[in-house]
Length: 382
Image (cartoon, rainbow, N blue to C red; front, top):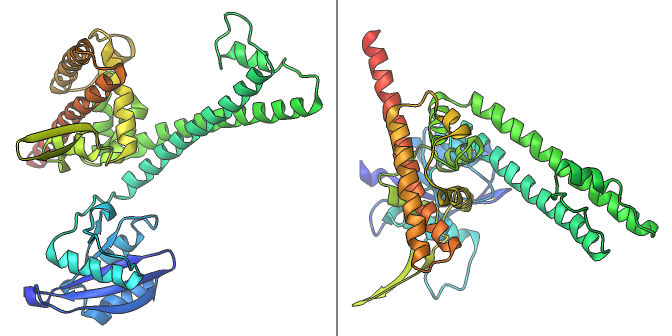
């Protein structure tokens, strides 16, 4: 049966797909099948031409084309994996790169088991992930717009009245009273003010869309989002971002893999008796890394449960609350231990963010287990 398996490498682009097939066995032939249009009909014909979906194993690199090809192939009954492009083996002497050679390399490496597949989100995860990333982009654009306006005022020597904090309602009302002598300056000021207002409305609109999307996601996702809010520094937006970027947390068999996925583990160059560790690798999901490091800043404060945190914990299981309380004590001690050793607050918070991922993993796995037990009890009762 295994001799009839064919490993197909696809070099996917917006309009075309280069195809290569590797026969089973270490010495099996690897040959190019040419280039086909990136269309569902062309993929259907390819599957039929190569031998039917049952004996084929497809792979292609993750990239800007997304997972459309994956969904089309799996819909035809074929096996397909999306692989990490940064982990594809490359020889130091390679100086020629073409679509044909890339497809042949993928087929050969896939047959050898040298490729690392990535997690493919379902429709709900992908939609939520795109939404939270759109809000993140809007927040960055809002910051840039505010900087342009504030630096224009700084260059002209205009200062806000004493006691007026930047970007509060009083500050915005004061901005509307500012005028310059030059008409060109007033035109620039008006454009910058309008852009700041536009970006603020954009952020509000996307945050409301995230609230609505969280209510509409499947039960499993919503339960994990609610449970993660038991952690200090992780409100609804942060929890939704974590779930959207990681998917089911139980797919990581231990917390260290989740930390590596976020690029928060230390880089290392060791040989023999020498062991050297450096800064974090940053070879992972930058969106997840940003959100957990931001949440880590709240661990500077003394452990407490009050106000909004108490409200967020209402209705959660005692196991989840206990994990969240344990996280507050552990991460608070960790932060001040590192600072007392001379580490900068930024380095200490990065280390805290890495350990926070361990508690995020524990809570996610706990909630998934609770849901599984509830379904089992419901089936027995029925």
